[in-house]
Length: 395
Image 1 (cartoon, rainbow, N blue to C red):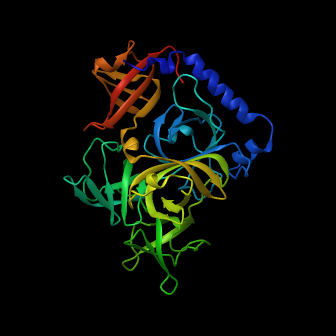
Image 2 (image 1 turned 60 degrees about the vertical axis):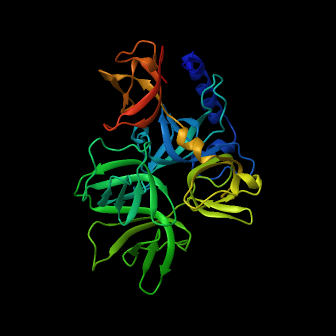
Image 3 (image 1 turned 135 degrees about the vertical axis):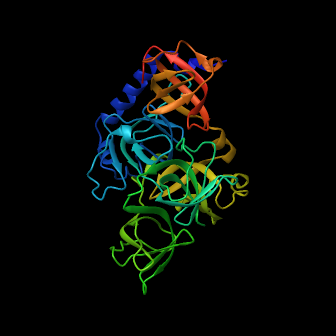
């Protein structure tokens, strides 16, 4: 049976979203502090999510649905942090960090809701494809192995050697990524990029060793404080090598939007196994001392996990660790109006959806408001719908 009870009354979802926004705007310094992108303090009741976007309407990250109305949206490729972008630029599969209000239950079986204050999005790799392995479902970009899964949002056209791509994904510490989204760029792109862990810093030759096998010269860029082995950095460099080397033009140490908040979640790959009660996910420290030993004993390097808990002084104090199999089975969710209905496909919020009549509840038409659940993408790059519910109003 279709789960139509989830949004049987769109007015109910609107009411809850209004409540979230109302709470976010009411008195107190907590909301103002978070809106500025800083921590909410040890007693804060806000939320912080870091991971790939798994749905739109407004955006869904780590199982929390954020309303981005009024949020300050920033892109990490901008040298000036004061530049604000339109929320519509955030797409499914992009890696984001979101700070916002505390979450509230949807009240109808749907995802919990929160109001976003700040959204920061950015890719993990920009560069040319040097190898394509169809059998292994991987491509190589800047010497990094990028794994493509059934849940990777990617172009309908096949990727070829020398294509310049922008990869959003989860990085391990050994020169590998799991792609959550891949976009093709113009071949004339003049700046490449990598988000990676620092393996080594050579002060004599002014080189950084990144993600196991990429060497970048930092002689032309200021080396910020905090660039040490184990740090997670974002490095931009020219598309043309200088004396056979990549030459950094800008380096930024990755920092969370907040350092203290009651609700926090992080999705990434295990980059350091638990030791003395602390592990690392995507290079970020996670206190797992409160978790059962059975839940962490079987973890392996490079395994995809989601950790939930409380962010305290920049450390995520974990209260829950999602089983990796649960993450693989999670669906993409879309909420919005139908357009370009043709045959058995339509578009919602820029995403092409492929469906069969058996998964639809209601009458599809251009302009109709729908809730879409899907899993994986077909060879044309369309989301495979597992459920489509038509509603009387859009959110």
